[in-house]
Structure formats: structure tokens, C-alpha cells
Image 1: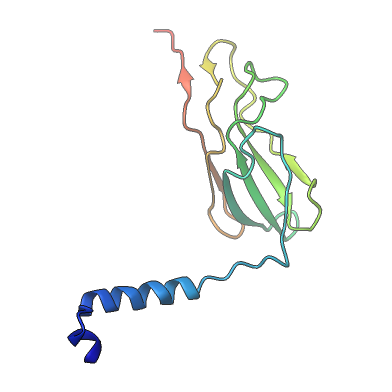
Image 2: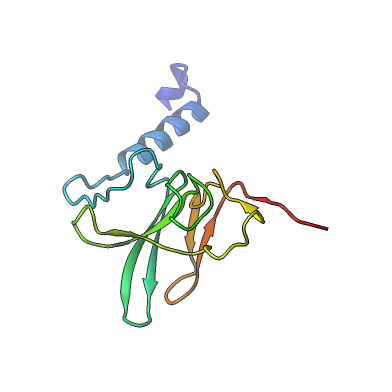
Length: 142
């Protein structure tokens, strides 16, 4: 109780103790780093998800979003964003672009700067993968 008598309030003491505890419990492993490389300027690594594929073989993957990645060759855009699938290895260049959303009518959608890959989530082992884009303009004829 001497601490409180000297002017340190109980709330400040508890806050300081909690702050110290949370800061001292943080651990970042700098010895076993998995580094993956992507296109410069693509925001590769903006979002991440671990996924377990069960078919055709049991395999663990690192899914990486790159919201400013260049468009695939058959997409009518320059920058669309994208999703990459990477093996969990120490090789920095083993990521592959996941191709999807390629069959679109000409002029029906404007995918330029849609930020595909801004969010990536796995449904769990053997489940589906959700990839979110921030902007998509659809042009509809009535």
C-alpha cells in the first residue's frame, strides 16, 4: 500500500502492470523465417492465410494476397490483384499465381484496380478458400 500512499493510483498501477505483462509476452522468431517473394509494387503479402488441402494429397499451403498484382494475360485490365499459393518451404520463389475468374464477357466487368486478394481466408482443412476484392464495377445492359 505504500505505492498508493506516494501518489501512484491503483488504476495507473494496474494499467502499468498489464502493459508490461503484454509487452514482455510477445515473441517474434527471427531465426526461422519463411520469406516469400512477389512482384514489386503488387502489395504481395497484404493478406495471408494458412490452408490445408486434403485432395488430391494432404498438403499445407500458405495463401498470399497481392491486391495490386498485374492482371492475367486473358483479363481485360492492367492491374487486378491476385492470389498466390505457396509451399511452406524456405524457398523464397516457390509461389504460384492461382488462376480464377478468367471467363468474363468482354465489356461486362471492369476489373481494373479491383484489389483482388485484399482479404484471404481458409474455411479449414479440406474446405474452401475465400478471396475478397475491394472494388469491382459491373456494367449491365437492361
